[in-house]
Length: 252
Image 1: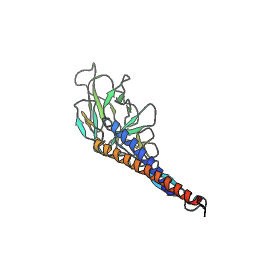
Image 2: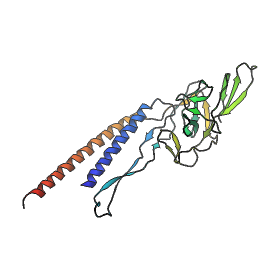
Image 3: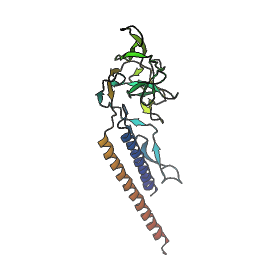
Image 4: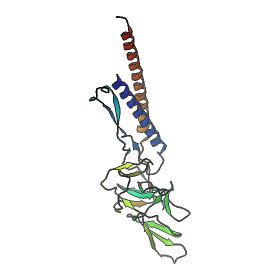
């Protein structure tokens, strides 16, 4: 009986977790470069079969990895010179408020009041040596496929081209990637791979999120049904337990 109840409770917890993840995915549908989350936080239930006093007890087996779907979103042309998209595999290197660097595909770039290159989420885009990129006032800016930023400085003679930095790019390295507790992509140990400048960048394009709205909506309905089934299972177990208790109390 304990195994049934504990397993049902674990299934309910998983259903609630999955519903929360799907809600997060749906709310991020319009976020450029967003990678849909997936729940890999539980590997089911385990049982203590070896101990005399706890042989019927069940417990959840937890896997703390936070997974995400790595497939690319649709790349859309915007013709805006600050919009960037990574074609194929790869990531930009970024940082937010002094936290550890992370990987992102978000490419709706802008230049803040301090002339530092960021994206629309105010995440600082890092160079290939993990430093912020300062963009001086300019008439024109071009970004090459390997991330080199060149500008025609304001008040300079026409045709003057100056390289001001290189956007840090990486394919992600060999270590598995996961989403940290802050929702940002890093390696399993919380770091980021070194910039290798192998991904290709397209200027004037932006990558949309890879969230499939239909799959998320259908999945939310399925999780709600799974929740309801397991609640009924617990109620049935309670009724069976009460029935057994009543029989044991009957006079012999």
